[in-house]
Amino acid sequence: MINHGFEENKHLLDGKKLFLVCRGSFDRLDIAEYINSLEPVRFSGFTPNPKMEEAAAGVEAFRESGCDTILAVGGGSPIDVAKCIKHYSGTDAPLIAIPTTSGTGSESTHFAVIYENGKKLSVAAPELLPDIVILEPSTLKNVPEYTRKATMLDALCHAIESHWARKATPESKAFAEQAITLLLKNKDAYIANNEEGNAGMMEAANLAGKAINISTTTAAHAMCYKITSLYGFQHGHAAAICLAEVWKHIDAAPGITREEFVSILNELGMKYPVSEDKEKDVEMLAGSVNVQRLSNSPVPFDKDQLADMYRNIVRQK
Ligand SMILES: [Fe+2]
Image 1: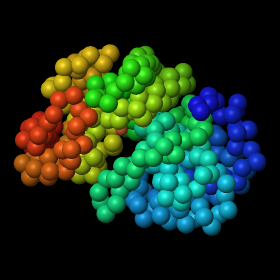
Image 2: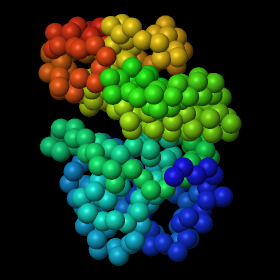
Image 3: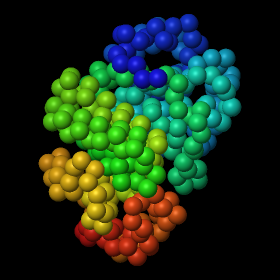
Image 4: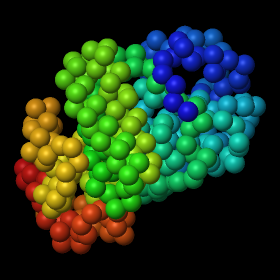
């Protein structure tokens, strides 16, 4: 259930023993004061690309806490950690999500990303879909510039990839189209950190999340993970530069053209990775993609094609 506005919906938290999954930046949010007044048990023991052992520590802390509700407040990582805590503890405690970035759409999906021994693992189960979502645009006020751009691009990639995904349905396509329209309409105001723009972008990212909840993502997402770890790029930034390349091979009309997409990347000043040894990196990157996971893409790619695409993405120093 999606609820708009924290003030109007904070009563949904009342009377619950909350297990709060959040990062240290939580206390800077306007909504923190009220949530803190409910005396939640707080869990912040995880890193930006959360690891399985961190989620396991979260499961233990949750069991010891005696809490009856899991509340995730944050970007993709806290929400994914909260989902894993719910999943691996086998609890039927409700999961409430309050996203504080407008990118992942994780609040509206039934999957989570977690890293085990350095490998990305996708956990998917119906109970991972949060029971209650509260969208509060004021949480976007303090998002730093680079994260602001990268998360918007993540949402845009979700919507575009969802639209052309083989698993797309009429319902997911409708969500994706609405997301793209709303995102493009609010892009400039959101980048300027304008209140209305933030509200529109939060809605757009959520719609894109609903779209990938049905269709999942495609090649650009499969290709982006190693770029984030190798060059320290944020997820949405990495996905977007991969998408610009993938799109050369895909004939699709998701409501935005490749040219328009590339011009947004240029306008935002998104950089490309620079390597000391480009060929070595290209080989490593191409080897990192699970080719089977590309089956949701509208066109198939083999290892050689992946390497060619990475060759166009990575610049030699
Ligand atoms: Fe993403």
